[in-house]
Length: 530
Image (cartoon, rainbow, N blue to C red; front, top):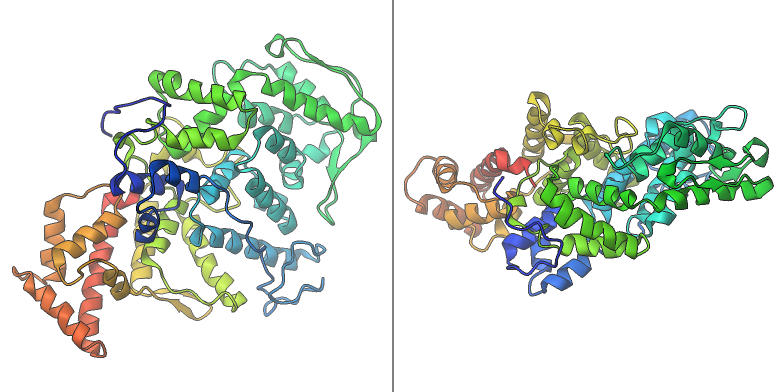
């Protein structure tokens, strides 16, 4: 990585060309396409930031796409949503889980042009749960919807809501936490992973974990309808005394329904610690900027933004606006400095190549094909809905390798195999073949018949950083020119095809060269970066 020029959290004041816009889009979206860049044309820096940090509209919920495989005995018709339907049985629930996963991936593949979907993934990694543990599709949807609702909302409200979420209650044993048998699981993670972290200034004690567990007794939910409830008979009504880290605060025990309010007091008490805001800004930093936090980053970037976060009453939108507007975020050192996660990789590839998928009206086929892209991310270490532990995916937090954990001999090969299959129309699902129209992709460049311009523009969109000119010239000669030395070879081939678009021989010659060119560009190490 290049040397960092600015650590400042102050507003960015540098150039705002396509180079800077591309870096911004690569980080806040899942990849930057030509359409994305064009959407920001003639817009000021301030306008771009304002547009990209807004929440996107709530999508239509997941549908019954499984009717031809398993009749839905709860009365949900094919093509209708199941989110408010009764549980049914294990088979129907499993079909709904598949529907939910496909639907979630659809939101990424066809994302609106805002940071919202990327933030939902960030919070999914932060407030991590595993569908394979709590299993119920209704819980999974409500959990995802909660992430969507609060992703750019108020962090205080977010923590209170996630604490009572049935998926979280099931995942971290919240519903098993009673006065007779306190369970410390959620109480520990609330402090260690969700609010304070493990830093040197997070000095809560084991006693604090035990007392917090007592506060959190009595929360429950119905597995049948997924609704939260509070059982006062299981709540510990005694006083809870915390350590000097929390200024020896006492949360007075309460009986009956008032006992549920102790949870709010606990969260408010933790929020009084400045470390909370610093911890959240550090998490955002490692997810959106870079994994290494130096002393200079901590002092000049983390602390000022954490202070702003506290002053704004833990509202996320002002924090995000300052975060993405900062000098430090837009420092050229970070251009193409991070290895793309599997979801970043497969979604940006989809958005770059624009493969043809079934119409949404063919619900079964549409959901089935979109599930293929979830599968590609899964075999390269990132199954949406199922991070490997409550800590999230290791590549986002595990020192010293961090993002390097995404790449090994197996995952690198599978990433490239996925692109190969897409480009050569080998991706199939339920008899549907996913096709990539490489001629259409080339036609969107300014002068596809001129090989240098074609390669420059394709590499400029596909790759987050510039590739060596010698590499591009080699690709031109070996692929577009078929070993010839004169650029006219490709120009003539392209022009002949434009004049005779129904000539299958000419079409095949053009397509084959374009497929190989894009395959080689996406096979470069630079394509693994964002």
